[in-house]
Image 1 (cartoon, rainbow, N blue to C red):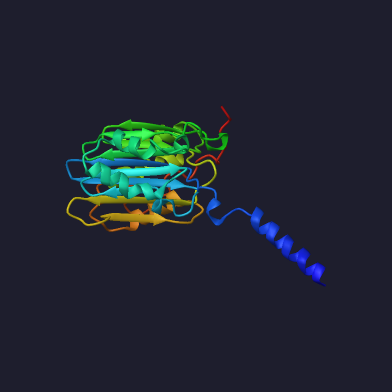
Image 2 (cartoon, rainbow, N blue to C red; image 1 turned 60 degrees about the vertical axis):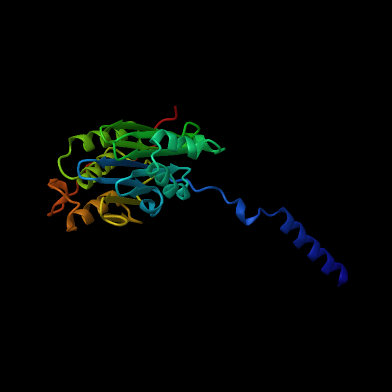
Length: 262
């Protein structure tokens, strides 16, 4: 009997010593596509995002009135959100903020970060060491905006997002959502369409001026667009896509396809 007890205790000790500590959990990967933008004339800034990652709108985009917007994705670090905006508010240029965040980060080449200030100066860092499953990744910047993504069906996702933002008439919120829809219609995240969100801040308004999320869905961007169309809010502008009656923006979009490895 004593021998059996000793054997059981030794077995339990062996399993406990060999087990991984609770802090050894793998980092979460927010593979996604997003856009950040500012409207200096109206003192408005915002960000929009979509992903297969649940509740992505609550962990990737960060905005602050009269300061700018920031997104952290792929191997995301949500705790960087507010400090990044703090540095921006202190007067650091966007590229200097990214340098501060990444200079001692051993996983820096697995991060995709984008930041923009109220002057429209933007900086982006792509995940150059992203594994094959996270490709295609890329980014584009333009006047007062920056769009970026990883784990995409292909380059057209980023191109369509950029084009839609530039060509849509309406408010900043209108244009952010139009860009997100265009990226989704072009293929989006090749793994699926689980969640989407948008945050907009305005000078004189504490916190988010507009915050809209779809945390779990079979078609998150379309559901976000539907909620936006039904919403009555001063952040909305003249864009017809944000008005009722709601119509699916791309009912004939192709099925999701994993891009070939490169």
